[in-house]
Length: 316
Ligand SMILES: Nc1ncnc2c1ncn2[C@@H]1O[C@H](COP(=O)(O)OP(=O)(O)O)[C@@H](O)[C@H]1O
Ligand SMILES: [Mg+2]
Image 1 (spheres, rainbow, N blue to C red):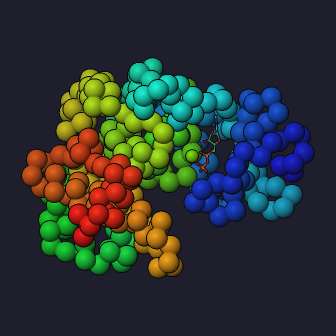
Image 2: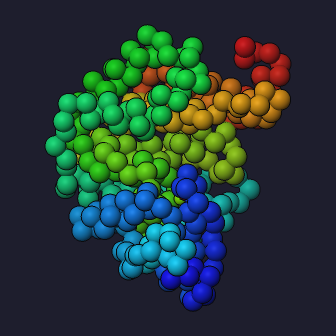
């Protein structure tokens, strides 16, 4: 197969994949991805969870391209992700359209139910491996050695203790509106074992980590409605309200968003500011978690607000 023949149109280079790319068929009904061994593992995983009734695109074809790369063709789940819809439906305000919130809740509930129906037997250390992988802790502590301290580790240990009784399931690990469509969830390259709810629960909260640069925000009422819908689904599916672990999950997300942020080039003040911003959000999340057992992203400043305070010197 040659990705330039048969009318495949280039969509984008794939983030975080070695030389991979995404193409769409001329009639818009199929997506083609190219890549290496990672893509092959992703396709194997995606076939497996499709069989477990996860809401994912069916894989139609896979093999090796003329150029010796691996390729996968899957069905299209539609022409707009929920991120695209959120951007398209923005009016004067910055809040998401309610229909996007409710659609996000429906897809997330479907994912939760499929995950809850196929629990994985944990082995000792699985939860900690999830924490270290999902939070990129090795990188975060290497780039921010001052955060590699007893206080951080106490909070993370506490979070792991709280997650001890949560079922372990196969998860997405990059779950958010850009990878969600009304018909299901795409882009499973980061798949792995997760405590149930890690994907679905923080999906609207993580918008805040972008500092306002997404163009839209989820208001407190919208986030509550989303979490209530997930709690209904999770109480039914496994007897726990999934939102009770929001704090633990956001602590890990705060690490994830801090990973790979430290600029190597000290003259890049824009990158330096973003790194400091994510450090600030991690510290804010940590303080809240210690004090209340959860994290409320309503208290996160936007990047501009942070930058203004920063230049005035109130953020050392
Ligand atoms: N099966 C699909 N159905 C609908 N849209 C898709 C599908 N696969 C990919 N896309 C579109 O292509 C974009 C890039 O694919 P994705 O695998 O998410 O790449 P990346 O890893 O760079 O995020 C998505 O954001 C989405 O717009
Ligand atoms: Mg994606």
